Length: 331
Ligand code: TRP
Image (cartoon, rainbow, N blue to C red; front, side, top):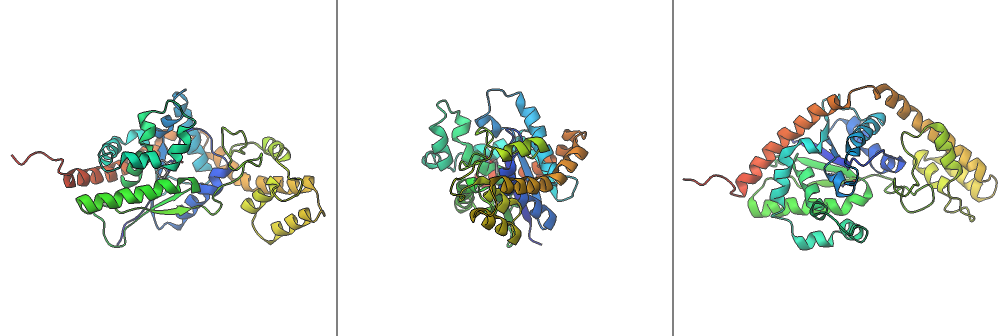
């Protein structure tokens, strides 16, 4: 039987929003429910420090928030195939990352699009930030089935913004295999159907720092207020509510509503009321699940999954070390 694994993750930098849902979480949930893959969901708290090192103490609550958000959308670490993994508690991952630094090229890191655009904003980037793309390759490869067997799979479902990182991960795994022998299963990528959700202000992307997000844990009154303040296009083409209706309630009914809006049969107010209704229906089960988990000790939900990832990573690290001849001398 081939081994089929999923690894994906998020940096723990605070609460998750609707953009995370349509870009990634919705897809993760489907993969979980299909039950075909053993899934590792990584809480990247170490990598959160690449951008969030000002107030490191918030990392603890950030981990809790992300875990609660994951639980609230129905990800379930009580299932035998689902593992929540706390990055900082997998020491072997650093070893893998350190060894992969000897495969990746400095010039490639400089060319990485995410790094390039962030570097224009960060004047004092850490060395950790500079090697982040390679560190992320270690996240993925740490649960690679090894040695690779025919039919083995390592799938990484992510939001569209991660595509370049994952091509790089595949590239590094293949380069390693060619140079040192078959150790890794090169990963394949899966991108969410709504790659990128616009912000409530109509800007290209929903983001926490952009102040244009609706969070999965926003209460009803806040959601309604945010919808009422959403960007409206005078030509009725790029009105934000249109995008959200299509993302959260796709189908003929929504298309009819949008047509009525664009033909002037209904106005902005009615369109937004329809969206509030759609979002309330969408958020209802999410809020129910959150309430159910709110009192649960988060730590207990992470220990088994983290140990499971460690065991996989130990196996990978041993194979990597051996194939790189990083062993005791023969005499
Ligand atoms: N870089 C991802 C993000 O910023 C988070 C992440 C860390 C990740 N390690 C990963 C995603 C491994 C997929 C696979 O959202």
